Structure formats: C-alpha cells, structure tokens
Image (cartoon, rainbow, N blue to C red):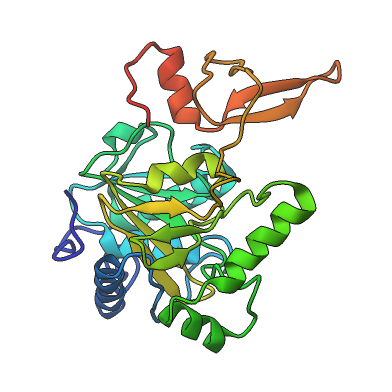
Length: 295
C-alpha cells in the first residue's frame, strides 16, 4: 500500500529544473505532516500552507497538492472528473501529473494506486492498497449555519452541532425530508461532522468502514482532512426521516445496462431522458464483460 512516509525518491524527471512532482521537498514534507495529523484525527480539518499551482484556485489545487505530495516511483495514477476519465478537468490534471512525474496513468480503477477525483467515488470498490484524493471547494460543514470561522472551530472543538441538527430539522419541516444533495454532512468516528466534498448522496455510504484511505484537499481554504480505512462514517439523519440515496426509478444505463451504478440523465431528441453511468471506467468494464466488484 502506498504510504504517506518515504515516497519521494531520486528519479529522472520529464522537465529538468523542476522538483519531482513539481512541488518542492519542503512543501511535500509539510503537506505529509498535515496528512498524518488528518489520518490520526479522522474528519478533523488540518491547516496547511497551500501553494500556488499552475491551475486556478477552485479547479482542484488542494487535491492536486495532496496527490503530488504522495506520488512516488511505482505509483499508477487515475484522475476523474465527476466520474468521467475524459473530462476537461481530469484530462488536464492527468497530463500535468504525467509530465511532472513520468508515472503511468490509467483509466482502470483496479489498476490505480492513487485516484484523484472531483465529486465522485468510483462505482468499483476500492481496496486497501489504494488512496482516493478528493478535491474540496468548501471543507467547512458548518458554513451554512455559522459564518464565523473562529466560532465554527469552537463548535467543532466542543462537538456542538445543535445548529446543524436544527438546520436539518427546518429542512424536514419545509420540504418533508432532508433535501441536501451533494456534500451531505456526516459524522466521522463518532466525533467530527465533516463534509465529504460535493459527492452525491449515492457515494456517501462508500465512506463507511471502507478499505481504502480517503484524503480531502481544499487549496483555496488551506485545509486537509481524512477518513482512514475501517472508520465509521454515518450520515446525519433523524430516526423517522432516515438518510436515503438518489433513486432512478428503475432506469438502466443506455450503454451497459447497469441498474446498480450512479446514473446521469441527458435529454433526447424526442423530449425524453437517456441515462448513462457517471463512472465511465465502470461502464466500459461492464460493456466488455469484465468482472467488477461493486460496493
């Protein structure tokens, strides 16, 4: 399994004059120390000195810094954008990783040791040898109920999440259910409320007692946090209004026929909707008849 310590070794670089994986060694050490703290305290936000990257803030600088700080010889990298390997964000970040490390990249989830993702967890089950890095635009789950950063930090320290529960209750009163979609708040290790990045509710149960290590990077907010393997991650919900994932009313993927993956709808010429798997790599494996292990 790829570890946080001791990953960067001397290696022939694609671009001379640049540190391996673009980030200088001192920055890598700082980010790794922050990641170690994050792994030791699951769900707790750890500050770090976010560096300028050759992409705009808001396009995944935090996740990219975490990924580049972890990579070492022998790693295989997969980059996806909302499940799509060929998305603009994914393609550009993948090209940057290839150029600055010389590492192999892949579209197959099972072949990757480090997976960087924007807003999706692959539909194929991850194993104990893999690390999933998620890009996070806003790491603070209390932002909607408390605008003060200092007060939100105090509320986390005191485990005072009454306002969060009140916001969920108001949601139920107004809409008849907890209507929060992407970034649904979760309780990690019975201690910290965490936002799991803007992943759909469909992916939230994959965090609970998972085999893989999940790392979250927010470059603009200068925060990292983590969910280590085999950690309890429970969505916030009421007993009489339980948490539920998205449903697709029995629809299947138009490409592979899957009914057990997260689907995205697109309009057809006749005014209807066509459903396809959000995870393009999973969809391709199903079409090719290859064995897949789902969650």
